[in-house]
Image 1 (cartoon, rainbow, N blue to C red):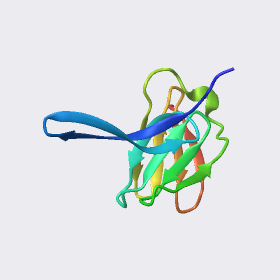
Image 2 (image 1 turned 30 degrees about the horizontal axis):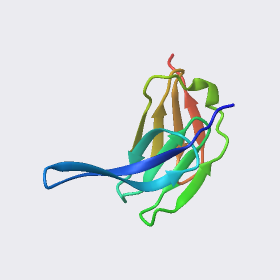
Image 3 (image 1 turned 90 degrees about the vertical axis):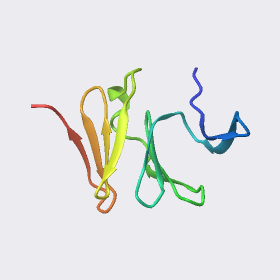
Image 4 (image 1 turned 45 degrees about the horizontal axis):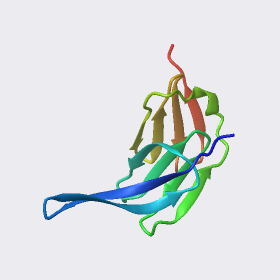
Amino acid sequence: MSISIGSILTIEKTDGRWTAEEYLKLPSEPRSIALDPNNNLFVMTNKSLFKIDTGRKIITIVKNGFWHNAFYSSTISTAIKDSVVYVGMRAGVYKYNLLTGKQEWLLPD
């Protein structure tokens, strides 16, 4: 059995000292996070894609994604451009259109 939990922290330097404070508990372990132009966070986990709005509300965009086996222990990356979330993974790039809900799995030729 394994546990998949996580948090987002804020880190500040005050009076020459670094401090960390929990910003929000997450329902599962984050693999990557991206910030959109409206300051919403998009968090990718091994099975889900979440949006965290500026009020710290967690909104599930994709609950059980098909990409579960595409994760690898190395770092993945997430980017947002023109209302599209791109997540680079071991086997390809996951693409999610925030306006239409369309999902694609992009593979190299």
